[in-house]
Amino acid sequence: MRFQEKLRRYSKQDLWDEYCGFLNMSMDEYMTMQKRLVMEEIELWCSSELGKRILKGKKPATLEEFRGMVPLTTYDDYADILLRKDTSCLPDEAVLWIQTTWEGGMHPMKVAPYTRSMLDTYKRNVMACFILATGKERGDFDVSVTDHMLYALAPLPYATGLLPLLIKDEIDIEYLPPVKEAVNMSFRERNAKGFKMGLKKGIEYFFGLGSVTYFVSKSVATLQESATKGSFLEKLSKVSPKMMVRYMAAKRKCKEEGRELMPKDLFTLKGFMCAGTDNWCYKDDLERMWGIRPMEIFAGTEPTCIGTETWSRNGMYFFPDACFYEFIPEDEMMKNMDDPSYVPRTYLMNEVLPGEKYEIVVTVLKGGAFARYRVGDVYRCLGIGCKEDGTSIPRFSYIDRVPSVIDIAGFTRITENSIRHSIELSGLQIEDWFAVKEYTDENRPQLHLYVELKKAALAGAAMSREILKDHLSVYFKYVDQDYTDLKKILGVDPLNITIVKCGTFHEFESVYGHRIRKMNPTPHEVGDFVALQNARAPIRKGEYSGKL
Image (cartoon, rainbow, N blue to C red):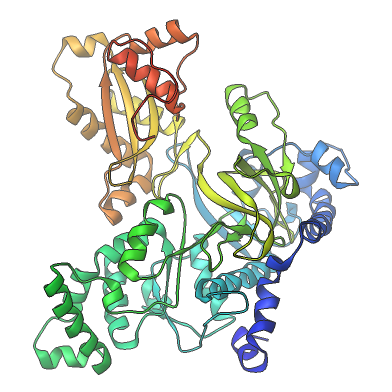
């Protein structure tokens, strides 16, 4: 039975309990479901050719044996089977393949198989997100078949392209513009058409990457002007009378207040959802522009839709039926980064501690291909349960990608390999470098590259920061298509370069006994490096004032 049929037959409370009932679980009930589902997955996965290859003849019979016998995996462990879409080797039949960026320049693409059961779970959990996004308390939500959603999603084969298809199976929400048209439009055309249609029909939902929703929202004044160009009679034909009255009143109000038109002046959202990285950078601005705070969800190509905030917007809870979750504590993650041979310990959901940061590890349930898989994302446990939500299970905030990856606004996955490759291709005389993800004074993410030039380069023509930036930007775009999209779609140039004096890297190693980490060294290490660069004595931990 579709969700919209259930809306007619059942009470709100019944539907809330069906889709969001996991929030009622005790910790013991949550873990019981997790362990039951993962044991079903273990039987499927261990019997598949993919599982047998990774297990190398071992046959775990319990969860403890599974965690002891199956190593922590990355996409390299699956690539040769998944990239050729060899379904005969998988735990269950794949009915759909989703793709995303793997590593710019080195491995352009990775794909993940979705089984029918995975899609059914994904669909149910997406409907739970809709319910929670529109609710004000337990049992409350406001979802209707007459609603409209502004389309700001990447189409299939990307994971966000699943959303319209799955929701269509449940409820006849209309997308603005329609999905069939949107997939053939440019980003700007899609936004203009969506807002133009919204002026006639209204907009009740908005969902996309936090960075994309911010860009679209900032463009609303321009888009609305273009959608209402022409004479007064022409304007009347393009929008509903109700919206025209609202539009004219909003224009007067904005003029009196000396500000630009905002989406909240024209539309009243029921639900606002955002996904991806760096959402915290945009949430306050998005709330100001739309009059409603975005609800953050977490979904990825490999793990599917795994987490959502609630009406309180006070941390994400993980769905117990999407993946089996393990967590690597931050100190264990860092030990493994410094020594790849070190095997980090993992903890289960009922073992995480409030305030601690963890790298997440998932075993995808319902016939998924990935077991004990390092997704590459870091979360902080905010607490065990929440009085406001009436919950007893852990809730989390998304922090960022693991330190070895620099993700800018959900668009790029910049690694040491991609930076090194860009530098090699550029032919620039660079002696050494390291990269840090930082935030500007406006709280926007950027890639800050600290570069030491070779003496030969310094002896020749002047090499300015601007020349370096221009050269490296060209090669970043060549190596990483997502970097190109970041600038083309969002108008963002995320690269900042600091040229350091010759010998600073060597001096750092001499003083501190180790080389500075190439990707995202700690704020204290960067502070010490900056102190050396500025020919000052090393500073104490916590003194560095840069935004890191």
